[in-house]
Image 1 (cartoon, helix red, strand yellow):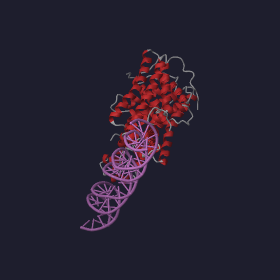
Image 2 (cartoon, each protein chain N blue to C red):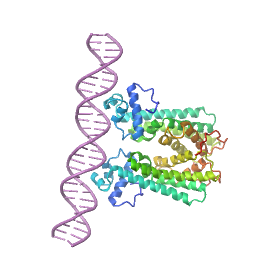
Image 3 (tube, rainbow over the protein chains, first blue to last red):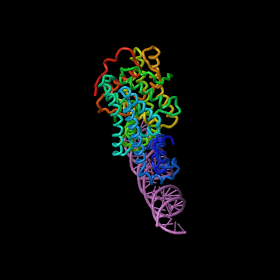
Image 4 (spheres, protein in one colour):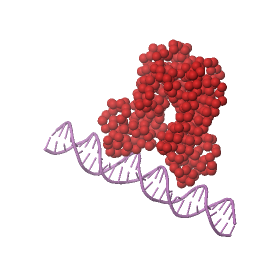
Length: 210
Length: 210
DNA sequence: TCCGGGGCTAAGCGTGCGCTCAGGTGGGGG
DNA sequence: CCCCCACCTGAGCGCACGCTTAGCCCCGGA
């Protein structure tokens, strides 16, 4: 059990099933995961799953919704607290990346198993994901409007930023050479560069060449 | 049939099966695709698949190998032809991104279905993928050594560049607002910024704000 | 004209899937 | 004390999967 994002889920059995599903989906993908595997990870019989969830897809939907809501909240909070637009961009990317690294198991499911959702669930999740994109784009727009950033193609650069942040979930390993915060700091610096930040030099980046 | 990368595959039935598999894997993912679906797209009965390929996984392996070999070749060629390290980075990213956009169907399979490969096939493909990473890292290293680039964490920045380029395959749609070449140009500019390029301003970027 | 064999299909094998259901069990309210 | 019912299990249903097999068709060579 790798993730503590679902602490509020009750009853206990439902939470264990959710955590088992997160691990299984992250390891093998939704379609390659069996309900028997999920139930086994939760220490229960296959039939128990259907007391708490109607289908396997509903498990994926719960995970996706909670995960997306959390990542959007983290992003929104980071943006709110920063004083100017360069700090906002750095804080946003740093927090968003840190979330994807710390919760890389959940994040992998949330970001890469969307296609397995049923159409109406998919629409709901995509709307949440669009919120993340809009927050990032808003920061870039503010920066360009104030003359602090130099970005030609705001939509394209936003998309690139999203790719950058989200993909962390795919390669991040907790036993790797960087902590979530270090990756966040590096990526915040890269984001400022991509935005053509022409303000103060981004000193204080935790450098670790090699 | 969306991709022309497998023109050399013979006999005709084997190629049609490969193209059908690419489309099906890209749409639904490997595990959600049935051999009946692949055979159907090739206009054949399910049994015909097994005359040309031993298993469904072998189809995925063929697609992955040919696709990776092509993208590495495209990257290597771009790097070879450019005169200085900034031009090399721009050309590399531009060509790599363009390949992922033009062949987005194949690229999606190649980049996001690796986990379904059998261990020994997986190792072989990962080795190819590592070649791409090494080429990009080499360009960054040269640039830093020559003082043209300012990068603290070369490995981390390389990883970020890879994320950026590869993720194009996930969101690119041919009916979208940008051509593969336009995306390539935008991303080449972003890459130069990420590398802290302190040379001539990257004029001539196909700008399209909004 | 006949034959051999590559390329293909119809039919189907065994398996493991998502999910169901009848029944057991144990802790809290009357 | 007993009953109730939320929770869980063992057994298994129906199905679709990956893959196999037996045999048909058709084309090139003698």
